[in-house]
Figure 1 (tube, rainbow, N blue to C red):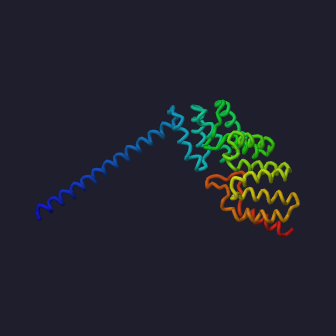
Figure 2 (figure 1 turned 90 degrees about the horizontal axis):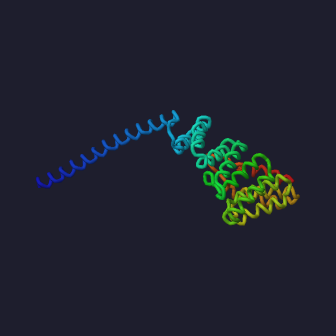
Figure 3 (figure 1 turned 120 degrees about the vertical axis):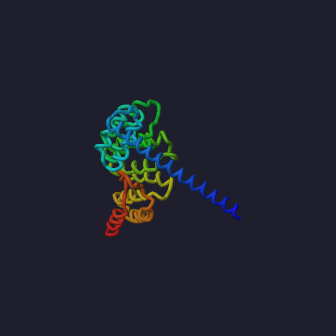
Amino acid sequence: MKKFFKIIGFIIGFILVLIIGFGIYIYFWNENRIEKSKELSLRIENFESEDSDEYMEYSVAFNKAGDFERGFKFLNKAVELDPKLHLGYRGWIRLRKLRDYDKALEDFNRLDSLTPKFIDAPWGEDIDFLRGECYFGKKNYQKAIELFNRNIENQKEDWVDIHNFIYLGHCEYKLGNYQKANTEYQRALKQTENIPEAYFGMAKAYQKLGQIEKAKETILKAEKTIHYKRDDIYNEFLNEIYLSEVIEFKQQLNKI
C-alpha cells in the first residue's frame, strides 16, 4: 500500500512539475511576444519597415476604430511600397467608410491599370461592382449602369452578386425608367425570393406607374423579408434599407 501511495505521489508531483513548467514557458513566451510586438510597432511608427503588409495590417485597427487620419498614414505607406497589393483595400475603405467616391475611383482605376487582363476583387468584391457603387454615389447613374452590366458580363448572371441587379434597378428608377427598373429587380428575384431591396424598389416603381394595388402587394413582401436585407455591423451600404422606411411607405400607399 505504501508503494502504491509513493507511485501516486510521484505521478502527482510529476504532473505538478509539468504544469508549473508549462506556466513558466507560457509566461516568458508571452513576454517575448509582447516585446516583439512593441518592437514591430516602433519600427512601423518610425517608418523603418520595408514590409508593406506590416503597414497595412497596422492600419486596420485604426480604420476600424474610425481613426482614418492615423490609419491612412500607414495605409498610404503600404500602397507606396506595393500599390498592386494594397490599392484595392484603400479604395474599398474610401468607398465603404469615407464615401469619398472620387478618391476610391482613383485607387480602383489605378489598380486596374496595374493588372491588365485580370479582374481585381478588392477586399473580396469585384472591382466593377465597386466602381459602379462609386458612380451610383456620385449620381452618375448611366455610368453606374455601364459598370454593373460589365460586372455581370464578367461574372455571369447566375454567379454575380445579386445587388448588381438591385443597383441596376435603382439606377433605372432614378432615371425615370420605372418599367425597366422592375425588370432589373425581377432579375434579382430570379436568384432568390428573399430580397427586400428588390420588393421595396418594385413597390416604389409601381407607385410611379400608377399601379397602386401592385405597389401595396409588393411592399408587404418587402416588410415580410426585411430580415434578409443587406447588412453589415461595420458599414452602411449605399442601397441599405430599413424597416422604418418600408413601413412609412406602406402607410403612404394605404392613404391612396
